[in-house]
Length: 276
Image 1 (cartoon, rainbow, N blue to C red):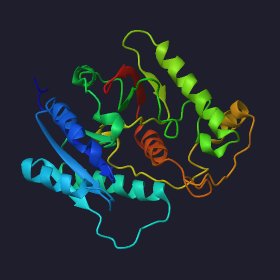
Image 2: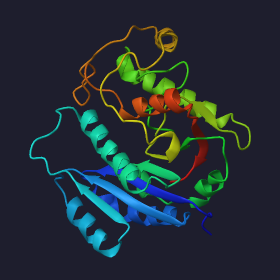
Image 3: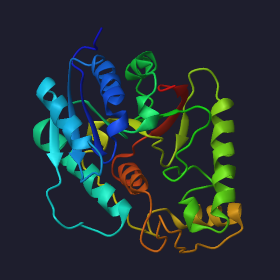
Image 4: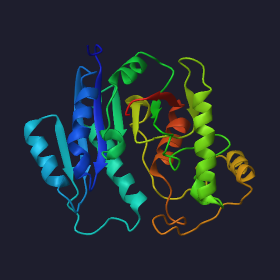
């Protein structure tokens, strides 16, 4: 049964997600059933597979889908995180322009992790709680989205310190252990988390922006120093091939930190699993 007076926009950028979309849409419909009203907002970018055709076919079947198509003939940035930030901001702007009264919005990825079996009862029980403003969830076999994660003392991007592969595993173990040791119904506070699926209270986030650029002023200096001590490293700017450390950071970090600074938003991680 839907919650009274509840509404949600379910958003995300989509590119080369064709093999997963049918299962993802089934899961979105399940999540949407938790609310009195919902809309799906997708920002589509040029793909090499049949993503666009699947989206257009689904749009004909379901009038809840709003498809925003990137019609630029040239990339707006050579950097992936900048492009993804732009796509997510377009989704948020659409929520602001068309559904400013909606209580929630969800930002999610449309690929494999969210195509698995969906347990909406996990989400349902948290909608009744007021101890979070942004809520992400654990995943099996481990919490995987370490790039978006900022949790003391690992407060910035693991890619901006030496031995990034090693500290990916250190941070993954750290957050997994933290989640495992929570008391019943306890949530884990953090600075930033996404893990492929996050639900937001709209009034705490609609005045914030995603930003995939590196901003060393984003995190307070004492938090940055804590990360340096934890990794025994100064900040570095390394070209990893798929990530250009001088120019790119995970877009979620800026979004969450801005909401903390502007609106005192509570960013939380649940130890429970929605998609398994």
